[in-house]
Image (tube, rainbow, N blue to C red; front, side, top):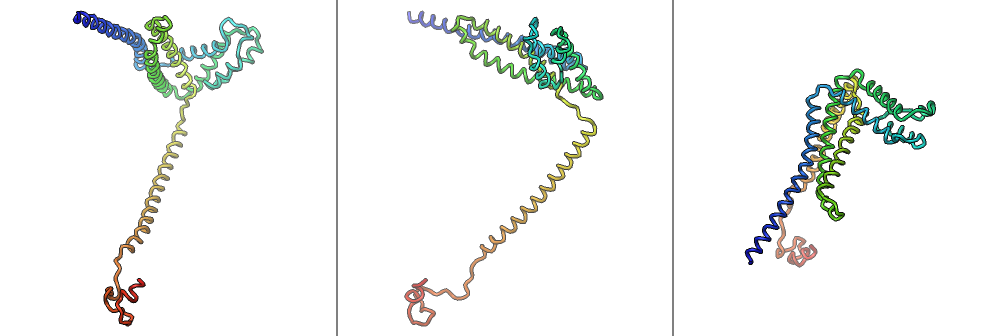
Length: 287
């Protein structure tokens, strides 16, 4: 009877451990599917010689999303937040988009037309930024895309770990933790892709390629700062050497042994004053 109880308890424990491993495997499968998508995008960027077409598509998507955020689809003009949209374009991308003037000039202007005009202004602004440095910008575009992708992917993995740690609490609300994990992880992944696009466009619109004259000026300034640093180091070393010499001088004087000019008088010897008393009973008592 005891053996049977032990076997039943062992089967329950093994079954629970199996369910835990199965659940972890299903969570890992969700992260694995997302990892395949991200790694495929990364490989496409590395293998591509020119990512300008990808940048153009991403830029149009981001500008369109910003317009949709402040001008919802199928909404009335009274519901539009035109000052907020203009501020968003200026803050995030450094663009001056006079949308309020467009609407005043054409009261029948729709959100699609506003989106197309904003995308054209963004394209013209970025084209002027790339003038004279197209080859350099192609390299910068690849580097920025890879850097943004890697950084945001690492943040996404941390968010997935936090989600996994607390997903079992959904069971208290009579919800399946596995289904909730798949739903919320999908939402996090969708936000990741949107954030990658927005961050790439934001960085590219704020990046500035220095001219050859500016590079030479920065090199000259760096060379002068290096020379000044070396000069200050040499002066500091010389000053420390002088202070060390001054500090050592009294130490040498203090370590010189004292030499008596006369012979030392013992306590029981006659006092040198000629009184006839012992030194300890005469002037020695005063010492």
